[in-house]
Image (cartoon, rainbow, N blue to C red):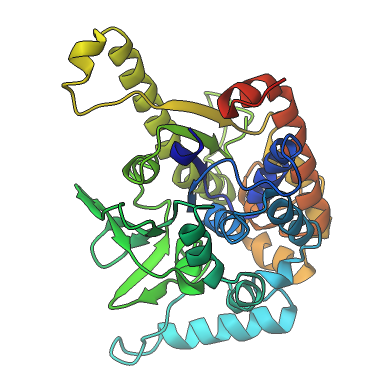
Length: 375
């Protein structure tokens, strides 16, 4: 049921390069002119950017993955946020000036970094006109981008889809049909405090992971019966139960980012599995009377500690960024995942792509069964 299969791409900053490696492993089982094997794509934060890029090439899976891989393998931090000494000092000076202004004058968004380069990159690389074309041709059913609304403290999913898909309203979350553009992607990937919030219509929006209580809600509302999730949570060494000192600021910040990007997704997957198990115990005749349905899932996530992997490429990070993070206690061997989210450099991103490819190949039989690929 390709029309009912969804791809869910979680957030995680630079970690999202891992998703490209997984897609690279899957695409090799399809002919070069084949469309994407999932007609519903749902993305959050950096995953929303990857998902939108694939959606614009829905009619040719190979081309979409190849272009996405080329971008990630040639990344520099300067393409995502201002990372030169002059650029950082100028931005921080602007933030300092804003902090001493009165509220009625201070109308700009505050952030640690200036993400203007990302806006330029997205405008250059993504042709949003293709989304409507692909939906009209049947190559794509729906594309959604999850955001967090600071006005209402609600999760808002902006989507483009075929006409039969309706908007939805649930407790603390809703789905809104719209014409997607660069601003939606910037909003979804605006990590709190690190990147500036984005104004959409009359609301202010930030990273979609912040208020995301049910990450699997979007694909289900969009019609999915099968969901493939590329989760960016990685195994991380546990701190000793009895700490000799208070955890450092860098460690705490890393925990917060891990929580924002992974915890709700893992909880939702656990809830979905519990519902599936419950439905399996109920006679089929009775199941039809319930407002619940069995959803098949496939989850792929890193087999290695991405924080540890990032530490090997720490020296690739621009000097000005390292100097800026040092007061927070962030160094090469710091026990914090922050670097793994902010290190948009080609060597690290390439290592993530290779890891994603290897991990997907280790689950190749499960992938074949999920997508019903003949052996």
